[in-house]
Image 1 (tube, rainbow, N blue to C red):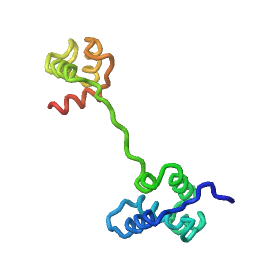
Image 2 (image 1 turned 45 degrees about the horizontal axis):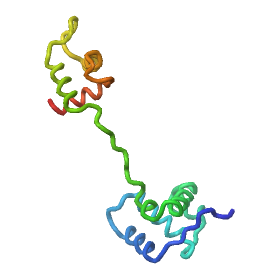
Image 3 (image 1 turned 45 degrees about the vertical axis):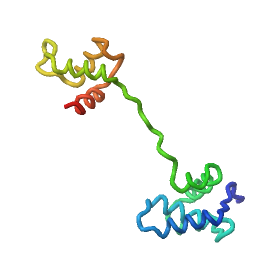
Image 4 (image 1 turned 180 degrees about the vertical axis):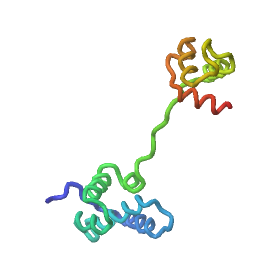
Length: 146
């Protein structure tokens, strides 16, 4: 079968990959990607995907995915992976946090001996401090101030 994504490494990329393999403390995923890329190089050993998969104990789909990523996304992303871009915004601002803390320090509603996290969350919504909030957000807020 004709390969869709053909790996052609430059001399600099080959040198980078061999340096990665010589280092002692490197992530195992990075080592495997470097090994696969070196063996899949069309100007180098030109191993088949099956042979690479057997040699480095992975599936042929993994080898194909590494080839595809090199061609479509570039050398750095293929070797190191995509940078993490998961950044969450704050749910509560400082004023809302202060009101929730003040609420917690006050007396619990009638029929309750203590504040629970879920009760605080319900009360914060009832008092229109926030539009909606989970008990987990309340827990984090109280923990960092406590």
